Amino acid sequence: MLLEAMYHVPRDKWAYAYNSSTIHLRVRTKRNDVQYVTALTGDKYNWNGTYKEIQLEKAASDRMFDYWEAAVKPQFKRLTYIFRITAGSEDVFLADNGIHYETPYPTGGYYEFSYIHEIDVFKVPEWAKEAVFYQIMTERFANGDPKLNPQGIHDWGGKPELDNYFGGDLQGVLDHLYDLTELGVNAIYFTPLFQANSYHKYDTIDYKKVDPHFGDNAMLKQVTEECHRLGIRVMLDAVFNHCSEDFPPFQDVLQHGKNSKYADWFHINEYPLQIKDGIPTYDTFGFYGNMPKFNTANPEVKAYLLDVAEYWIKEIKLDGWRLDVANEVDNHFWRDFRKVVKAANPEAYIVGEVWSDSLTWLMGDQFDSVMNYPFADKVLQFFCGSMDGYNFANEMGSLIMRYPQQTNEVIFNMLCSHDTPRLLTRLGEDKRRLKLSVVFLFTYIGTPCIFYGDEVGISGGADPDCRKCMEWDPAKQDRELYDFYRLMIDLRKSNEALRKGRFRFLKADHNDPCIVYERVDDNLHFTVWMNNTSQDRTLSHPMETKDWKDALTEESVYPTDGMMNVKLDPYGYRILYRQLDPATIHFKI
Image (tube, rainbow, N blue to C red; front, side, top):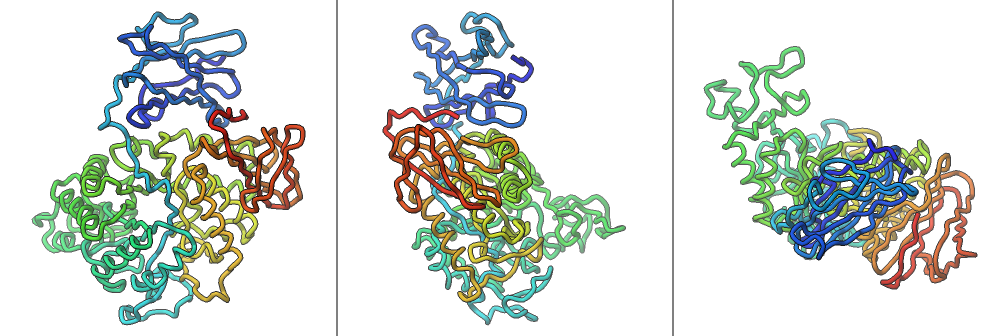
């Protein structure tokens, strides 16, 4: 056994309270190095009377490591433990004070989870596990009130540029809410709606005023109320890293310099404020001089922005905030932000924009979730043909092990957004590959999100081309693709195992781009079979019992001699399921 590969710490994603009675334990070992990992557990005050051995399951693997996991329910909310790691006839014991070749005498040097405090349990909104999000860029969604059109508006459906307008507004959203319910979505993520100089509104001037090109505050409230009546949650975009150069306090600094009472609201490096050799003398979003960066450590700035966060939750009964450029705002601010938002609405969903490993923000004191761009990158690499099943399973296993389980259950998964090329374009305009990626999105763990128009076949390259106008002419929509999206959304919403069940790869081999994976809970067991090649393929895997059905056709499917053999067309897929007896032991990889 490679001892150097073994890892566990009694905190973070390795040992955490999943709920008020359950602790999740994780251990890392070298890949394919050990057969078993067993937790030796008990209460340090009554070790002999509470002692239990709990077998960990291999939950995921990546290129270098296996990750083992178990759920433990300590009788008195305290847990003392070590791990027995077995390879063949050899055992070693992983403890807080090191690795041992004999069982250390309990409980000195053991790991401890001191107590499950209810207040410390990381709780995420339950509704987010049920949600199917639809991202709307309001300016490009629908023009419902031409009286609000800005000057120089372009014809709907024209070529998007960095600074042109097409007249989308909140009335247009209101007019098409029924279309969204028909599609099956039950949550909307709006990009910024507040007053700004740009069409995209990421340069906010007034944080409590809906942009006049979109409508007014009353219209936003009407849209939100109608969404709630239809069972649709609403999440707005909070741009708290920076503002517009026309934000009144920044204008005051421009006018009065270091004598401005707002000078400390921003990060000023040199007076006067100017652009020198393309670099502002004050900190900004990127190097955009028109988007000065807030000093969120300033008490007045913090109070101002936290008031905004609370205001919209109370004013329109907002269901959540998406946080723009969240990784560039200080963590102290986000901790106070969470307290304010959760006090106003304990079920508010907080999603940060962070493009890399985000564990720092996902330990229960800041965000509930992040926009899972690493998920999109790996999924699209695989379905574009850039990696085999083995490496894809490794990449996804690594992502699953990044975060606690409650975060994984509500991680914000999308395949494209307003900041990336469109899904169809990223997949080379191949609708078959698109369908495979969407099947994976809706059968994977986490909260799925669709970018407006993907469901009807809108394509587009990088910004601004990805921000095309929504296509509302049925004759120009891909209705077959639309029906496919409806089918997948309905399948997910109708089956709790696809929303909350365990995820695991069953077949993912070297030099083979075909995969099989499962989602399973106590009632249903789903397997998803994917042929990510241009040839007909038959995939085989050992299966139990004969009561399998095709999830989309209800056709009965029977294993042969304990093997399921599934024939798939090029870039084809099949989703099978079976009812489970609660006593059923799920088959192993």
